[in-house]
Length: 102
Image 1 (cartoon, one colour):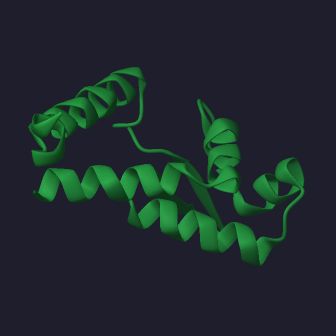
Image 2: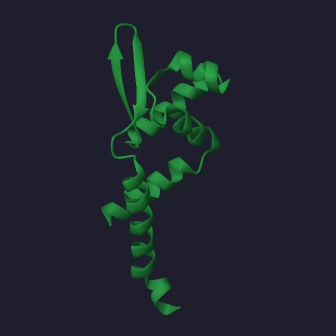
Image 3: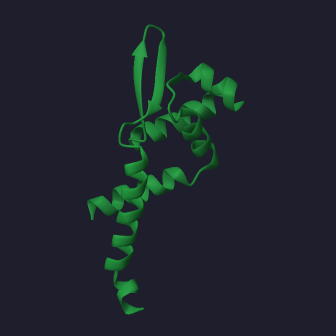
């Protein structure tokens, strides 16, 4: 059940357009909040809220260097993560009571 909860939380995080934009910009990049606000043309407050949620959900990692915090996608978010997430979703659906009734 814990795996299902984690998967649901990840899917919720991925269901927001702003967070998807952030992930697409961070794909293969490590950027500061300032750089992200300039690229995405969104406010610092909005961005910081989204980054915090994504960091809490383990979609992003952050490292501090001097005055700056650099964000990047966590190592688990690569092609195999996407494939395993889809496989896990299908496994959970097939194991569910409502699916078995169909």
